[in-house]
Image 1 (cartoon, rainbow, N blue to C red):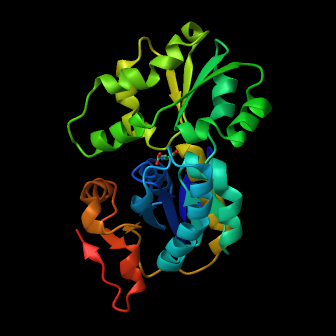
Image 2 (image 1 turned 45 degrees about the vertical axis):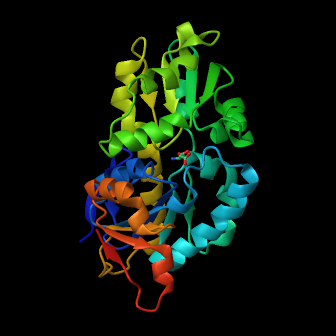
Length: 294
Ligand code: DGL
């Protein structure tokens, strides 16, 4: 008897079988993982962070293009998921096709929520808050051309906000002025006085949605794509594992490209989101598959 859950306002069967690997540079993908787990508690969800290459937002396109298919392949070899989710705008807007070409399982990407923001804005002015990498992508320009040509879009890239989000999630001290600073250019740009919607186009940013809202000069809507990615992941997973028996190994593992001992902060936050077993990718290459329970 399959579980039932609400998917896109319809009740649909959700497979109890199936493993999803949610991937990001750091903690941001946890905001997507939680949306998936909330919708389908019966499936196995593992997490992966490219801690050895964090952050992505200030890396060159060439470096990321080389890195992403390779790290995705190693992670899939280690975790053996049915579906791989790139829960990172910076990676997905650059190398979704290359990652798909490198893997033999379905890959779900992340698309900045420009389309719903443009459709829902009352004032006709929206902001896009992302990493500098996502801001300069052709993929982002194409989304704006295709879905937001009837509104004004103000863009701003912030790598500081990525770091601030990680510090906040880890409960570490940080400069709270950073939340006002990170979005100030959106409000101060030409037309920014009409801004009514901000797209959080980095999966780290929903971790600090409340802090951003409190620091904004006036109330605006913040939109992200976490729920849409979760719905798409479950659609793809359902097709992929239809009818298969439930996996014996539950989810809850977190794979790290660097040594787990160097990522205590991330491991601590992952644990809060339900990922308790940290495994360094280099460890999975060893015969005894040493895993660190932190
Ligand atoms: N979470 C990632 C994103 O959605 C980026 C963070 C980083 O710069 O590594 O864009």
